[in-house]
Length: 169
Length: 235
Image (cartoon, rainbow over all chains, first blue to last red; front, side, top):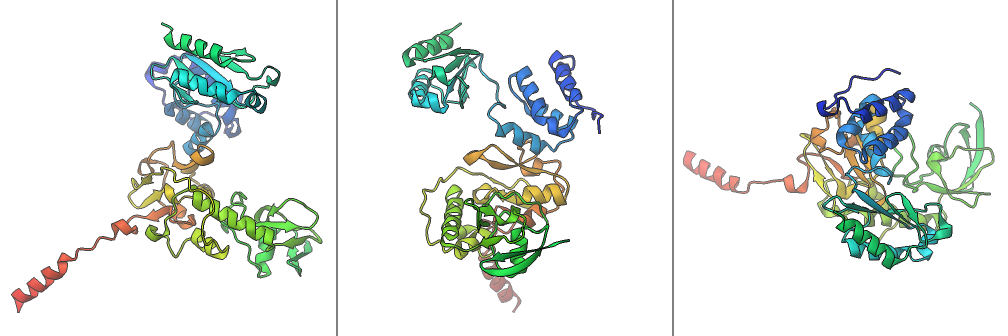
């Protein structure tokens, strides 16, 4: 079962480099059904979010039922079915950060941005996210802004950073 | 197949070596409550209603997923197990909107039957009252997520018996919902063969035949007057 089934590719994406990378990833895993999570990881990484068309294409390629693929994609927090914001702000809610006041920090950022944790602003400027332990408990509470970790995060300083991201042109 | 001798509730019984505690108990006439178990389907051990005590182990074990061993001492009906089972059934009721009075399965519902068996007089937990939809886009069947207990019997019946896997579960925790294909309405799920095996597997009224719901039981009382009027014209 190592052959790929023919896939319907939207024409505007036919020459998309990302699609080729995704195809290569599936090929490297020999289109095995148990490589689903690795393939979804790659798709999420390449596109920033997973669309239904893409999930269906992956299901066809790996010979998996669409419902299984959708179930896996919605089970793990890492995968997102909605486009993420230009900037991201992830508050760690792991035990150490929690003890060090991560909830107050998150509440402050929610209030500042007007967003609920896990959602993206309407103008797609910012996604406010949460994580369960970044493995950086020594610098709790930790916040990641656009991939950069900030330790000993202060609610007021973080509020200002979030405001700056939202107001950015 | 080698035989294994074990005691269940103090009764000495013998079982085949590949049997589960649940199978051995049922053969010996000892009933253990189950919900996610369905004869013919694989076991998931999700509902935890068949938990039993096994001497020498502080942990409770699911009878449907535990293979018999020689000299095993099983207890299926201790006060501790009874308390757990009742709590589990109460939690199932609290999780969705189970309103027996307007349910198509009332009187034929495994969840309702379990509530009676475990002696559930009321629910001690706060109801979550989630906002669940009813999907009647399929021509022959409907699904009411308010009554779904996520036992995955329909998922397994569709996958293992029909070989289609139209059903699966999306999301997690309290947001978990049964879905067809890519979370499309059931009627638009192209993989569905409309075989009805999910309907047979469903323990509650979550999956039902169209036309069987209370709201669909329409009666036209004015027909009486029509009949009488017609007779008067004739005679």
